[in-house]
Length: 119
Ligand code: SF4
Figure: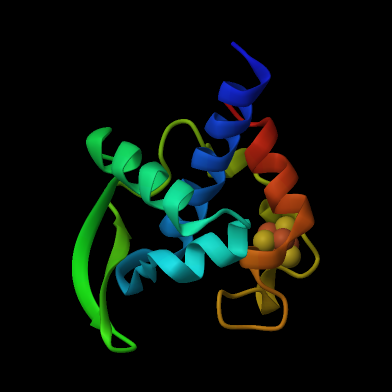
């Protein structure tokens, strides 16, 4: 595997983990790409690949005066990401950690490092 395809795979895994964390609420593509730090063009390609693998569902949505997509998980806790081994299980901040909170999985360095190592 080349380093660029490995990097691409890592970004895909991180995107998938974040989409899974959002659950039924889903996440706008543009918000996800900002969190991950990729361009919208690269992000769209990632979303299409994840959709083709049937790991996410994309739904068109009108937002901020333009059409975009919202991404939803197809399957929570994908087997590539065994949550039982995640740092969250033994994390002291577990009870106050939420997507909307100050302590959030969306900006947790420990979680991101774990996602990148998993698989
Ligand atoms: S996402 Fe990070 S802060 Fe939140 S419970 Fe998991 S390890 Fe702890």
